[in-house]
Length: 367
Image 1: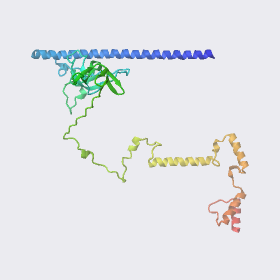
Image 2 (image 1 turned 45 degrees about the vertical axis):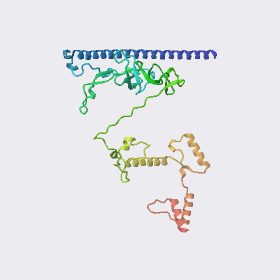
Image 3 (image 1 turned 180 degrees about the horizontal axis):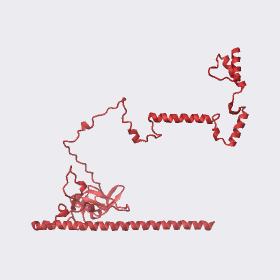
Image 4 (image 1 turned 90 degrees about the vertical axis):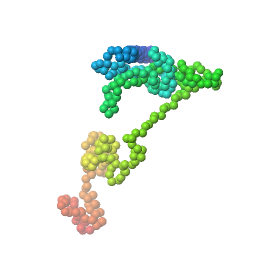
């Protein structure tokens, strides 16, 4: 028995080890695939960005002497970037780092090779799953307006200028800190942020004025600005009651309940009259059928087994009940005498009277 238990535990450990190896291999393959996809995507986007900016720079420098390259399909979108290359790719494994940067924070660009390095701007959008953000007025690019955005009601320009996403690793948070020597506040670039219980602090920094860690408050959410137009619906019109409930008609069409719930659902409290009549007829027929098959309110006779039939016979003998509950002559005579005493008579019209019935009638008249 001990050998069997030892072998079972050994097999379980081997199976768990194989599962760990398989999960580790799958996770490694997923990371490699994601890394390759990100690498190809970033390389293609970088090449398009560089070529587009180089073309725009050449056209600007040459002026009237610039070659005519905006012909054919690129007549209106020459020097732009496809919109599919603008957005960042999300991580496939679902593991991303919380950089502690939100919309409305002031950040400094530290990882860009172009002319935006060192600029300070406000974060307009953050995509945590892709670990990227868009900074207002920085890393601007020209994109070609896709066809689905070109509508007759709202005509769009063939080229739009927007911010391209930046990786969160290439930006640093900018926060004001009071200088202990002068007492004035100055902007400081935070290289690392510590997150604890929904609050953020400057890592490895103790405020000399309070001898505590420096707390960085979260930015306030910008309230959207609404502009009134001439075709807007007035509030008084929107709050006006245009429907008054009444008992003269249903609050909604009868066909709506069929859409919300099955027509023949058992959870419905209202059904059609034809369906109710059909169900009542079925119940009545079932009761009639059960009354024909059952004896004394027990099990249907058609479903009795030989043992049940024997038990039924013994039960009837013990109680003095005859087969099929037949009325004997003595029982009929007693019923007739009882009805005669109470002043009642049996109807004789269209009734075939047997020999026992005649005796009951004679005894009733004689009394």
